[in-house]
Image 1: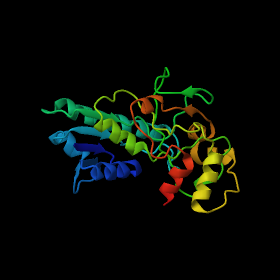
Image 2: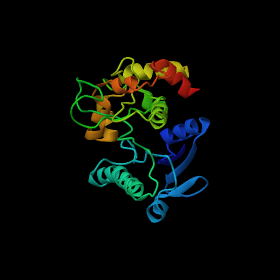
Image 3: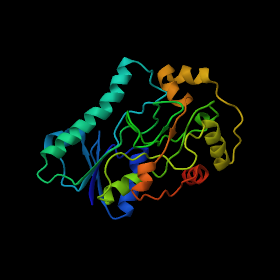
Length: 253
């Protein structure tokens, strides 16, 4: 297939691009800067969608960017970075003489927090269902945060590829591994430490998390949930790393 990927130069985008190309697909990125196998968002708006079979949108400002203060301006930027890029791609798809047959939207790579106790599947009522792909990548960030859920999902690009290649796939797919949903960040940190061959000793207090990220974003890290990939499994996707230790060892390697 010929696949156009918005935001294809990020962490998930690079993994997805590598996987798609390894499976014989052609990939064109839409990004702020042009280049080989890339077009800019301005070019997309001006010239329309390149001839393609599928479109994926991964674009969006990092909600948990610790270098940006949480406020109205940053909140608008986070929303706009997702909504406007999706609108741009949707308009280009609608105007295309030969529209793509597949359209995959990642509704919010990162964390999903509708309730700290309920179990959520793709069939649960209410709200959006986000793909969990936020890997705590730095050692400092991997210290223990009390009660925080965190799952590194290396299968996210596999799920997107599966959705593109299997025409029967429709609707929402949760990109969280099936084993032990709601894994605490304490468990995550210990498993990551084991993968790195380092100790995980000192927990980060909740007040420090709130000081860095602000109260609203800190809640994403400090409050838990159980998200289940019911429809993802029913669609026929087989997780490469259904268990957290194997996923972390692969990423670290």
